[in-house]
Length: 454
Image (cartoon, rainbow, N blue to C red):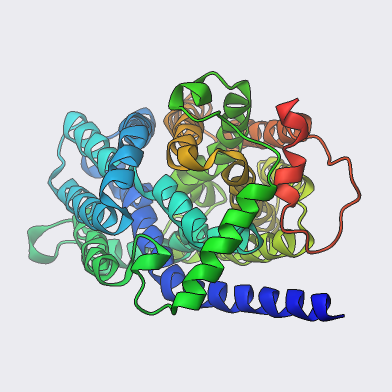
């Protein structure tokens, strides 16, 4: 009985300090990723005017959207080394100012070459942020709280879809012609400003480790460190054996990266093409398109947090990922069927948006628990850099398919197929655990990956 009381009090102390950390950091990280995503994807609305103003074809736009991910992929691993050397607080501050400036510079674009150069520069600065935050959270939170925390952070990309649509539609409509500039130019200038302001907030709020946090007591610091260390100690799986070269030789890294590639193909392509998809449903006004874009991304934002919370509570990861992927694939495929009523098309598109967004936080709980502690930053960056190459491929291929067919349907079928393949591949790569699952098992992700190591 005494042992049970002690265990309960320890668990309560762990939950209390983790909630304190999340209240401190998650609003800042969430807003930072929201503005990051806005600066990355607002060209999806700008292109509604760029197509006529600068005579950019769908293929030109698709290539520009994809080029961002070339430098994004190439600079992720170097960025992870810089992060470990200088700490998240300083690195996030610098790169947020950088990507804000790059996004603002888009208002000067006049030729496809300038468009491509601006997108490549933006990819350089954004490269270290997403994997950097996953690593940052892994040093502050144990597994039992990590998936939910990643979900809140990662939902910034879908909430960006909620915010960017109405805001971009309004900016392009209300400010078009003001000060001698087109609406799409005002869009880039206005929407880049919050990133620069959030850089200053990051510099003030973030700390690199629990021991640097003056707002935590010594007991709370010890509790966090002990809990995270216990997670690592209980894990029977290691991806990599102590050196980065060992990660490069581990085939499981590439299988997980392929799963991530399939999952992110959908979210990257949809973020760039949702306005065009809605326009294909028969809506033409930019402001109205922006308003309707709230529906799929708002649905996805809520579902992402709820699914991740349930995954943390039950300790189950495989089917939370795969079932969500399968349902999302079905939604994308059905939304592409011709002749559907507008309301039904939007319903299916919303289901698809849930599938491409809610899989990601559940996914990251698995490799972050399995990579050797000294390699977490590099390992997560490696998986993300390989998987995020989907951002190079998917938007560009969808653009080519749209230009060839005059419709978004074939592109949506392709995204549905990739999402379905990701769900199947994860089930094959990460077999079910051999022991019965108990609710609340915070180490389920490590157990699930045990079979992968054989």
